[in-house]
Image (cartoon, rainbow, N blue to C red; front, side, top):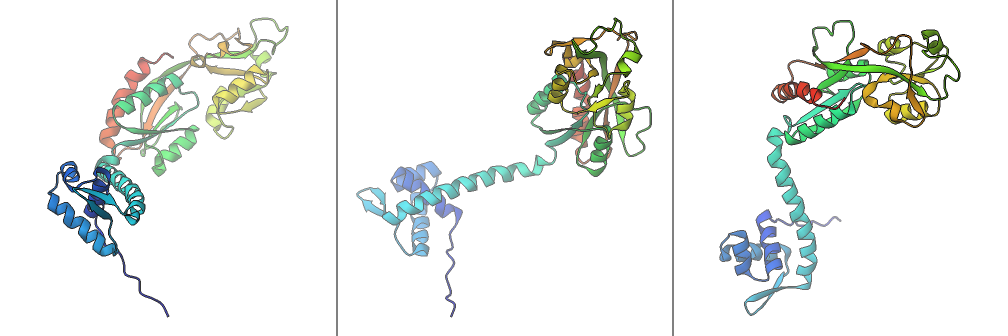
Length: 301
């Protein structure tokens, strides 16, 4: 036969009063702390004790001392009060929280100095910024599905369609880099034929075909989209790279800039910002879009 267990009914005010009196040792000091009437605190604790069925305090003159049961309950009540306070803080932020979060997806070639400036500025603007490195196709899919709000990508010579808007952000200069010993005794400047016979490290996924094809010179390719892996591949002589100058690859161990017949003057890639119009975050998005050009301009690329 099942037994009915009475549900303990208590309020936040009762717990608050109990923990305050337990901390300060008297009704008067707790009343000052909580800015409540002393009689009100006494009534709240009385109601809590009635519900529990046992006393929480023993009176010693003007002071109140916790009973053994009260001491055990105080620890749990203190933890619960901390959770309640955290809930209150979170609840107050809810109305504006949807406008305070932006998800940014960026191409592997995006300058890290620029991204760090974006992070710093969004912190000042009280925006929670999430960042994901991805290919152009993945970035557009994330925008379309609502997984991302903004994308920073290399420009393509095609329309983004009616579902997306875009804006030119800036250009990144490109150059050729390889381990010092990779090309051995080949005469300088290196020809495109020389480059085509040696594996090329491309800092994009093989699936990002349009970008990879535009960057590819060699018939033998190695793909990565992570900067540290790119550095390891070049430093170990696994291949050469056609890379943004802002990566400062010539400062890596045993890596140098290659002198080629095509040179490096005027070789650059245009970066664009892409977004899906009609977002419910458009006020915050417009603010961010207006800040990006200046952040790009003042980044040490």
